[in-house]
Amino acid sequence: MGKISENKPAASCSGCFAWGQLPGRFCRGCYTYGQLHAVGECVGCRRQVPVDDKHGYCRLCRAQATWAIKASGKASVIEPFLRRVTCQQLFFANLQRPKNGGPRVGKAGRRVLKPPPVPEPHRVITTSTQLTLFTATRDFRRFDRELHADLANPWLVRARQAAWALGESRGWSRWIASDVDRALVIVLSGFRDGESIRYSELFPALRVRGLPVVRTAEVLDRLGLFADDRAPAVDRWLERKLGGMPPGIHGAVEAWVRTLLDGGPRSEPRSRHTAWAYLGEIQPVLLEWSSRYDHLREVTREDIIAVRDAVTGKQRESRIVALRSLFRHVKKNGQIFRNPTIRIRVPRQTGGVLQALVQADIDEAIAAAGTPDVRLIVALAAVHAARPKMIRTMQLEDVDLSNRRITVGGHVRPLDDLTRRAVLDWLDHRRSRWPNTANPHLAVDRGRRLVGTDRAAAAALADEVARAAAGGGPVVSAGHPVRALQRHRVATPAA
Figure 1 (spheres, rainbow, N blue to C red):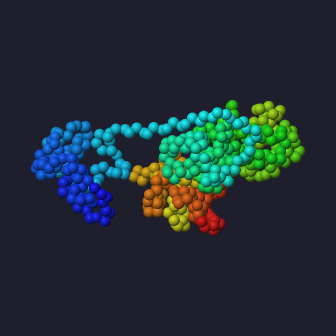
Figure 2: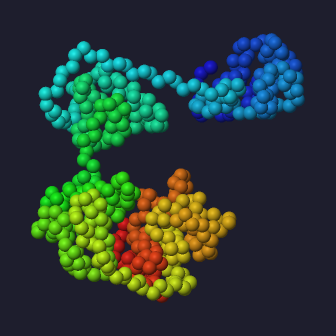
């Protein structure tokens, strides 16, 4: 039977009454059934149609019995179910065995299919090895597939097999698999035994062609052919910050920063933001000391008091805290004889008087926000004291509308009417704007981040409200959210 035209009208099969586009008077199943069996009277439906020789039933009755077996959930022979057929369930044609995927029917549907065996990579056999006299940087950007491609290279064959296996396990699309294959052809066509592909050689050639660098490097690393020659980001940062300091100060400060980041034998690692803040605060002081001293053991108590009195407010306290941490570390490691920061006090800064936001202030701030996402951000910041990071990381499951509960920063709180209205408005906007998104976060946009005029203003407002609630910022007075929102709207350019 030939191909069915797409413009052919639907009809009913003369054998099984299936409805759909048919190649002729019969569907494909009934046509094949009629070629294999002779016409006779069906035991079940009493029609003159092709019946099987063993039981005497037509294809329609056998299909009904097969569906009854599947409905029972147990494997069984078909004969008892054939005798119970008293009615017929009609169906659409050409849907019993889908040609494009779908679960298998019958007993085969209960069997777990074994994955196809992964071909073993061919062993690379070499008769001799040319030793490397010196290492020269290769420029893969000049690669021309027509002139330089060597698809028979044993390392390229092995890498393509490894990429195929990795793509199968990771679920790569055919476009990603094709790009990785192109990248492997570029870097391994002229590869020889004993060499390695460095990141500094791989990145420029693949980036200029828009090919994936990370996935290609992962395939090469699995074969032991990849050498990551990138300098760690912390090394570049320390080199930039500690440049111009004598070796005695440079080594002590670098060891202190690395202990903050990685921890030590008797100290836990600190946050990278803490290390950045500490070194950024005392770097001008260390550079000034470097012009007079060669080592931290030359720093005296008077020097500490002088750099403390050179600043005021919160910066004075931050500078003393960072210097205490530095000198405590070098004293513990035996690099200095005496800690000059001992018994140097800094009076604590008294915060402003906190004033609660009244409902009128909150309503005015919400009214100033013109879009659903900004109203949600302002409500979370003003009512639940949510910081910007908390708002960015909140997920849909953190909002329980039925029980009127919301989880902010790991704490379950009652869901008030104002926040509930803001959440419902935002969810309606999100559902209409991105109907097919699978993003689990509550606040999403096209760029997956909070940008734009209103979003920047709302994020700044959230930061100010939360900082004031924690006692580390300005006083939250009447009308403050609205002024902050309007101020940031004017200062922030439109996205």
